[in-house]
Length: 278
Image 1 (cartoon, rainbow, N blue to C red):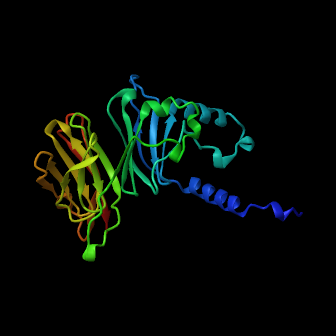
Image 2: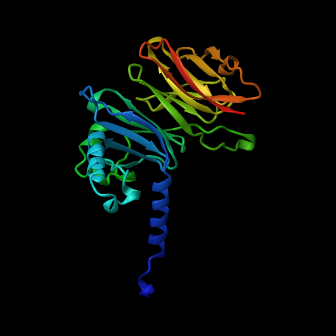
Image 3: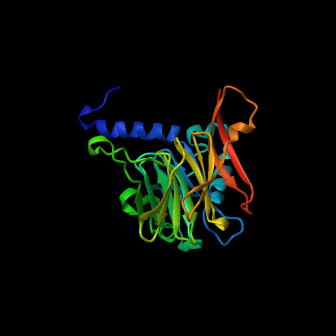
């Protein structure tokens, strides 16, 4: 069975193959509930390995899943069986998007994301929700209100290092600051209004994976591949405590790093998740 090869679009074919593979192997790095007056929020926002940031309606996903589940097995198209459709999709980063947070309250808040390109970008959440044709919000069609880029470091003969990636962000809306955990072993404190770095937290000896803000004490806590979690004072920029999780384990001949940390509601208890290599 033949066809007219003169109308063959090789570029479109290649793009479709790449897109299909990206969908199959896309990784979700972070999710967060969107601001809502409802005690049971309906929208979650997802940061993914293809650089996209997309909100999803939980109720719509469940409804779509139920309708597909009601079909007979022969009628179901397996590859799309568990595929949820977002309300819209922002191409937020050139490379993976690693974290998402909301800055501010309710509909006036900014949707923030950070990623492998070393940027922290922010969009007004209300504008995303009120977009007339939200399903087509892509890339440059929705310019961010906030666009912060990590600094490069000078090397020999004035050479500049690559822009370090942002692996996680934390928020202190009352102080007007964003904290980022980066790949150059530093954490940065950004002034949102001025779009400038206020402070650099130096002390880790390896890649930072996570950061949380302890706003009640004006502190942040960071976790790193150097195997430590550190508590920092945001006024002085100094490290006030170093936590060595590996000292609490009985495993020998292992190397661990702190991949995720979280605080309880009282900000009195710290939970950390280590990655252990034997």
